[in-house]
Length: 513
Image (cartoon, one colour):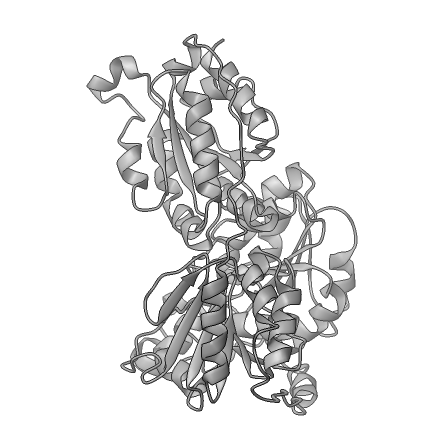
């Protein structure tokens, strides 16, 4: 059996049903029997698509990149897949091994290039490597903490003959818990005077929303979301939800000024920008989950869903916290209607798209998006790295299995990977795109206003983009919204991709200290 035939059979055995890519000459030999292939017009978009597909389906996907140049094009997306904990099998062609000694065009040390970003890497040496390497790659990618892996396929290996040895595939065991550790953690919670709970992305990964709600209700204390969560962390409609933590140590410490114990479940801490305060000074901190950074406090490795399921009967009521209703919000919405403020726009969008999955790259409005749309099972995704250009490819991958996908994106971010529109149109993927057009990089203007005021009015922070014309150039149905936002109903209609541009308030909000 030829190498490319062994690859085909191996992919079938591994149940890899999604492959995205942008092939070149070095990839043609390996793709001869491959199907379910989604073409993108740039390598990076293909990797973003695979990332989104894996996140939504909590399973392995595959992306096919064009050897050194294609891999180089995709490094930011590979970094994001690592930080998003996405089990993506990254593949690339390699030049014919028979003349690698001459450093031929397109060749290079792909293994070294990916070293910092993948959990496993291997370059195929003979056709019989393929089933074993793919099995290892898939199972390592899916093992917590999940993440991308890499396989390199030299051109000539695909035409060599070899025996096909069928592999037995197995998903890793996620049912990890520790009875003694659970009792120990619950004892610490019960001894604490005023504990607080922080839920993270693993609540969505392991579908632990029910357990998280029951555990939090039993305790009766404030519940927060980890800072800059890449996906939903808690059902934010619960009345004990106290909001998202901001990624600054001083602000985070202010949230916990009255607490003596902070318990992170399925999440972690992240900081930006730098502030001199040390996090959680004088506090006891516990982390429970399968993605532990061990930056501070005590860490317990276990499935957060199983922990919550067992811990809810062992903890005592510690408070009676209920969030107060924001009575000023309706007035804020009414005032912003006159200026097309983002709160008004998002409030109106939620009325129409409340049952959709949101892929967020609004950047300067992301706090508003999180607050207004809220969290729920597979309801919110964003790039953990803060990378621009991720949302359009990721939503393309998500929409393969989710016909209700809404992208909320800024005008600057929209331009990073605008070629994604071509792939959406080609495969008739019903991604609905809401562009918040504020005419510039407002988050940078806000940052400059707080720390470097002389930079705020630099001309390269202001954009004048004709988003409507650009989108129509890809044959995407596109409209510019009027002040009453009636076009939101139009945006939802139909089974194909659409773009709605909303010219929002250009005033710079205070987003930094």
